[in-house]
Amino acid sequence: MKTLLLFSMVLFCTFSTSASEPLLQNTYHRKGITLNGRWHYIVDMYETGYYNYRWQPHGGSENPGAGAFFLNKKPADKMELVEYDFDASPTLRVPGDWNSQKENLFFYEGTLWYKKSFNIPGYDSGKRYFIHFGAVNYRADVYVNGKKLGMHKGGFTPFNFEMTNVVQAKNNFVIVRVDNKRAADEVPTLNTDWWNYGGITRDVTIYELSSTYIEDYSLQMDPQNAEQLVGYIRLSGMQRAQSKVTVSIPELSVEKEFITNDSGFVSFVFSEDNIVPWSDLNPKLYEVIIKTNTDKLSDKIGFRQITTRGADILLNGKNIFLKGICLHEENAMRGGRAYSIEDAKMLLGWAQELGCNFVRLAHYPHNEHMVRLADEMGMLVWEENPVYWTIQWDNPGTYLKAEMQLKELISRDKNRASVIIWSMANETPQSDDRFKFLSNLVKTARQLDSTRLLSAALEDHGKKDNRNVMVVEDKFADVVDILSFNQYYGWYGGDIENIKNIRWEIEMEKPIIISEFGAGAMQGYHADSLTRWSEEFQDLLYRETLPILARIPQLRGISPWILADFRSPRRMLIPYQNGWNRKGLISETGNRKKAFYTLKKFYKNLDFGH
Ligand code: GCB
Image (cartoon, rainbow, N blue to C red; front, side):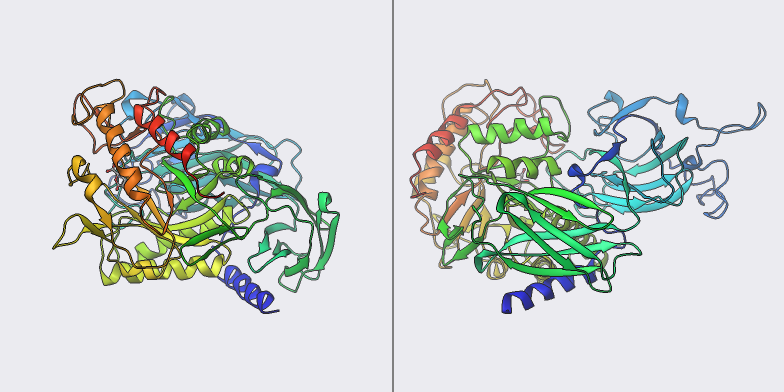
């Protein structure tokens, strides 16, 4: 009963804090019309398509005037002046960042307009139509048939707009103004150690839904009772009140009926004692079908519990050690952002080859293919909000941007069994404002999802009176479930030959994850192991670091930095970096470095009674 009450409170909070356009759920299992493909684009460094020469929006929003690119205007006759033409402009592939597609856009940060025409086969005026973006980096202003649908900020989370009232069967066009300029008050902020890939970086899809549809749902194993499933369903539309919804799990012969309340919402708990729990060793997924009078969807959901007890992380009540690796959402071999299921297979396949059961998806939400594939593969996942380094902690607007991205991430992935940790931030400098900022994020995350663990990548440092003793002095560690920290002894400060003499002094009885360590190496560059940038140096750092980490009593996981080399504007040293952060265990050409095999062996031999 207590659980039920708690869960209903959680659900109420979810309901009351959601964004104005709730995220469509389970988009990869709904039938959609893809808008992927070639889109025309116009580079607009000076925002000419939006502002006139007095830097006023063209004609105001009521009467936008010919200069506004989102109108997709064509000259009415040979006299009329229209100074843009999407259809005569070149094209970019969507999904895909612009930087890796056109040489002259490689370093571009600014505004670029995209346009695509579309029809809606089988258009039905009784249905509702939505346009869904997997992600656009960073700001997207979306217009359909010349009407603004809305604006979204945040480069790594999905969003959608309803366009029922502006679309027709044929001859529609969508125009998106994308702006990836960095700004101090945004999330992430000005300074990151990764490439600021701009553009419509993930899938774009149109969904046709019935006038009352299943807007949101959650189904999870009760964190306190493995023989109980808890969940909720929320409908959107005129017929949402007092409506019958059916949840079935055919493999378990489950078929339950519920009636929504006047707001179209119902939460429930039911017993089921035959559930095979999802785990890394047996990633069991069940087909779950949710049906109403007007809508039906099916998802594949795994049920598991993830908790901590003292320093242990328990997966379905059993101790687990997280053999991890960090990764960026990048397909270095093709160049640019990763976005497809094929990219996900390559990246998670590499992690699996390394012997990992855990990936840290750094430093922002990766695309949904990654977590869905992780669900199937039995790869445990750490997902991260892009609160990185030096966010404006005292700016309430910045906080809302961070919170919104966290909410969108949780909304998208709450039904993914593989996701066990939400990470609030990475390497953030300590202050009272930062503590408040991050603690508020934690509150939000716990309200939205009480079934997962929370963490953040913190920092360690050497003790003043004994540099060989490392400590983590950060009161935010009290707030999270797992104490995670990045440590770079032997690369940034600290002598690689002294690694063997260092140790950590941490009293806290919480699980510890070393969320990063690593060293840069240019694949194919061989020298003695004390020569920086050589594969041997990186390998030595792994050989020295792994055994001393293993001595930390509360250590329950590591995720070294990083699976593959990735592009970073901060890494320009010639000939070693050349625009790449070289801490990858795999090069941008797909070749494994020596340390790859060292870590692989460490994981193979790791005996953690699992
Ligand atoms: C870190 C950051 C990561 C960087 C890495 C490095 O601590 O979390 O984003 O890329 O160090 O290579 O310096």
